[in-house]
Image 1 (cartoon, one colour):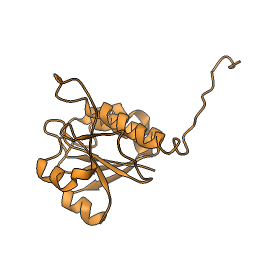
Image 2 (spheres, rainbow, N blue to C red):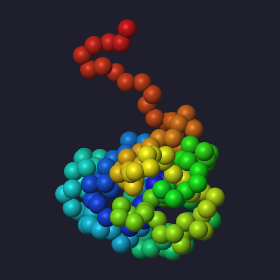
Image 3 (cartoon, one colour):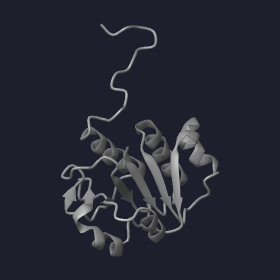
Length: 164
């Protein structure tokens, strides 16, 4: 199981979509306050559809509170400022992968303490960043790919026909 950590997320439908991705992959979602929305907002639940109640959700009052409850954990920091890509690292089972708020990312004071585990998604020079939900999906699925997708269903079935 992997762990996605969102530091002060601001946009409810991004968090809802990330929550749904966490449910689909078996990952836990860790939210660090302050949030830019209420968790009972319709847009969070709409993006998470009817899966929100299945989400393994953890809440923290601050980054320090998160660290206090998870002492010594290795945290991969998703940032556009990193020197290595998300595919350059090996994610241990149970890894924590953190992303910052949509408007500013993870504060540089935090990034400096985690230089070795900062990761980026390559993109064109003229774009500031990817949508947070898309970035989480890219990195999370790479982490699971490195572990043969864990216990995820690897084959699908057609509803009205059979595969040959």
